[in-house]
Image (cartoon, rainbow, N blue to C red; front, side, top):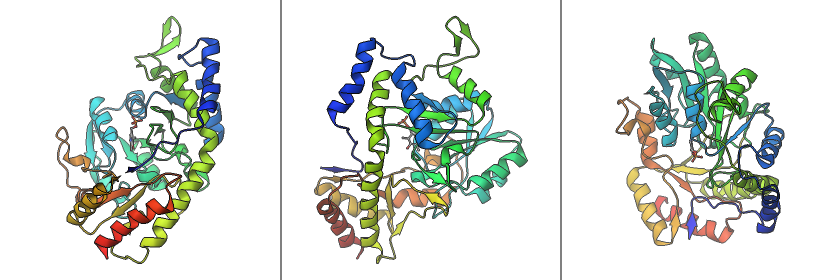
Length: 359
Ligand SMILES: *Cc1c(COP(=O)(O)O)cnc(C)c1O
């Protein structure tokens, strides 16, 4: 069986050795030494001033919206995982969808201003498949209209844009460390704000609003990462170079083999990006063609995923918006299996099926 992603598992003895520290201390959670060590190592690895480890990648989105005090309308992208929209609605705000750029697949920054109303308080955009949004243009628009910016950077572990971590852009960035993501802690995630006082608000919010044991600064929730999750992160982190290099090999081979098929489109990475090879989406000619390919894949026990489908403007709990590019791309995009150790043999099997249908 070949799935769209394969969770990287570190050697079990290395994981156990780290986990033993938690046993020795009899300490499972509440920001123990492993969570703190992971945060320090991630700050260095990623090049960010602040980071708060969390129990998944969705709570940070909700905490970001709440901590910035957002109300009313939030401009967002219809081409993302459901969490970026559900978080907006969960926090009592209304998502206003702006269509995506048909090649970069990120929110079309040239269409944002037309969607701003007196009720707009923020832009929540996703760096899709690790491909950065037009962060500079979005910053200019946000400043001009006094809006906050949150980036769902769930796919962006290790991505750099113009030599800086992509996590440094916007007021708050969030990431997911789910088992299907590039870097993982089983379930997990983090949130990052450059501004120290905003970071403090995020920090208190993720721990019930605690300032001190008997003192609360604000309303909070529980989004703490446990020591068990941190142990996984600490044992995966040393392998990031291996993981990314392995994925680069797979992506390069896919690209080399489908180059000649000019009717197939692949992701266009924004200029100035150091990408992380996290997904390999291809955009077929039509949804029919995609369905044919899917059937052939499944017959061979190959399970790619329709990331992202459906377009989020189609959810039954949002108002409808005209997002033709997102609707169209969502209907015919497929992420091919990608992991650091996908063999040439299996890649050829996948490519043969793709070529059989599109040639
Ligand atoms: C995975 C993902 C999330 C949610 O992260 P979890 O850790 O699963 O809660 C949010 N947004 C995007 C774009 C994702 O891919």
